[in-house]
Amino acid sequence: MSRIDFAFGAPHRLRTACEVVRKHYDAGRQVLIYTQDRQKLERFDRLLWSFDPTAFVPHVMVDDPLADQTPVQLTASAPLAAQDASANQPWLINLDLSCPPGYEQFERVLEIVSEHDEDKLAARQRWLQYKTAGHALHAHKLSEA
Image 1 (cartoon, rainbow, N blue to C red):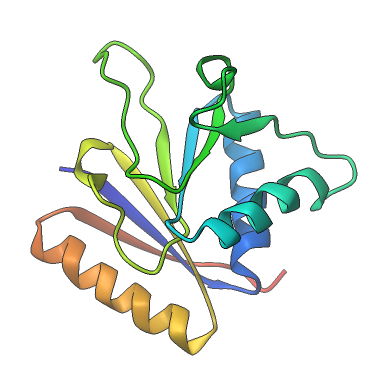
Image 2: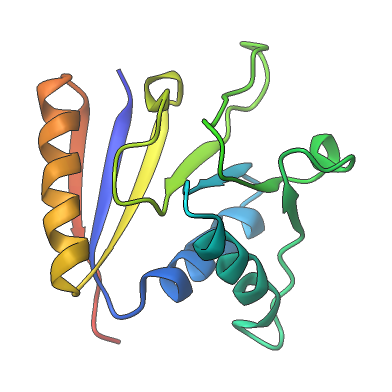
């Protein structure tokens, strides 16, 4: 079963996701960011380059020739975990309003939830879907700082 972490109370979902991705990149983890919304993915891509003038988070789309050498990847297609069991499995960050297809193949899934009503409602639906499937769920309230 996957461990699913929900971070509630993000002031801005995409900016918070950038900060989370930076922390995971700095910790040496591989991260895969998913949303089927290509416009949102393009906004996130641009934001990763500009959210902090001193941050550097190298990232590419999963179909980029450099994807195998880049620890942070973005996709609008069904996310795929590493096929080699001995390889470091990426953490999946879901920026979509629904559960990512094939999320079960990931050990860790991160959900960032803003204070917007649409986002909270969709997160409740994802929580129920994950819970019904028997995954380990963990809720975290983001601080106001």
